[in-house]
Image (cartoon, one colour):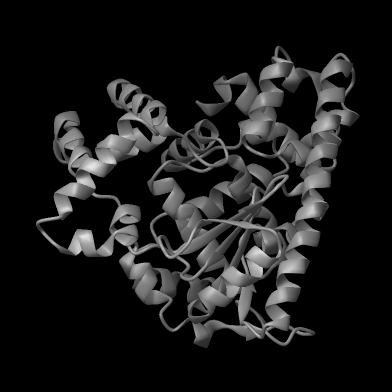
Length: 378
């Protein structure tokens, strides 16, 4: 069971304590390793959220030294969030000036459902824009001091600026492998609602935002995993907004992506909305399995889960067959970066050689990690 891991149990419990404004009890936090708990909360990016509960706990429950570390991490996270928020407004302001239609996405929206918006930790800013303005957006971002890390290769263009700003400008909401989802959003204009007070900013309806946010989480679940912050996001959004689930379920069935939505929704409500302690709540087998994966993942998933999932989707769970496919696969990034080479069957092998060369030089450490995780996968 997930709660047999003391750090997992205590992290979920601390989230529940903040939601219910309860002081953490010694009998629940008994025998927890403070340092491991801190690391786990950092891995799941919920340090800022749980810090108020940590500060309320008695010193014999959580040591003063660890409380100080939680406090430092919280202040750091809040500072980063405030700076991210200011930067988001600057980028939005430039898009407005240039008359480019755009929409704020993911954490930029979900943070407003948090009791303290600055306690929803973010790693980047996600903005959708009309893709015909890509070159103009690039000029804007470069003019703001950003470096362009990716352009025209994936479904989003990536920009970075010191000390820690990352902005993903989305031409599409999903990448081309998610073909059904890409098709679903081809008529995105029909789903956009003007934002009051802005001339060029748009938003989704509450239901359409929920569908997109779920699909993004679902994608991660099907690949490398996603962390407890996602479950907390779901709960806080559900608690704040009354949604039309008949519409949501109907839309998800259209793209055959409805199999996890009710599970995620029920799991978030069972864990965080109940008056019972999270580890005392009875979960269905599928919910238990999902929660185990979530707690094991960390906020952005990990290679171990990625390899386990990939192997599960390989016929007969054959590691040899998986490796063959991996060795001779040309990733989307290479296909889009070198489209002429990919389209020509005579030059396509050169892309494989380029990929192999980079794998054994630039990405060698990642390849070794993947191979080790594949070896251990069952």
